[in-house]
Image (cartoon, rainbow, N blue to C red; front, side, top):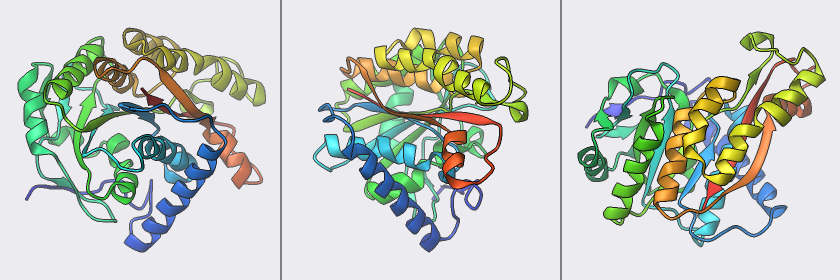
Length: 298
């Protein structure tokens, strides 16, 4: 059995089973509280957007998307999550599929849906199998302890999507194939939003609260608006021109997939930043910020 070993356990989330379980339970507890303050969820959620930073900062935002998916399906999850990850080290213009085996998590393994992965690969030349590309990429891995806890029987199809103009075509092919095979699957795209501050070498609106407010309120806005409208063709260019998302390809592909599966709109559940989270946790929060988005597509 091929096993993709956890690469960021112990840094992005706790590496030991007990600590990870407690951490994840707390994140879903926070997600449940956030959902209680939101309007009723739409039925038939077919996709979602999650961040991929460390659990301390973005874990509750990611858990919110997953909890909303569960609630929209009468607390039952899909059989498979098709996970479209950011490609932080872009290679080519294809979607890269981890098509067999299982992924290790502290809470137990998560199996790849090999049959569905094969069908997706057979359906389009925009996808190719590439196990090595996933070895150190964290954008999909950090979702897995959350999925393993909330949907213990679910399988996955992990796909890295480049921030390239071809991303919507990749997503459209995935969505059409899932529809053709009537797959019980939800498509999840992973991105963080604007990385702002001296740590990231990006301070066009200056330092301090004014700059942080601009990053969240202005620079993130284009991506968020595209998610609401399922405007897949706009996302990659928007992310590139405004430095507003590290997973523009993953988001574009997710929106295209969701639209092919019948979604008509994106619903924003939460938009926050690492600075806002840190301000509640630390006396002296850092001067940098990364944006985090939770959204569902229905």
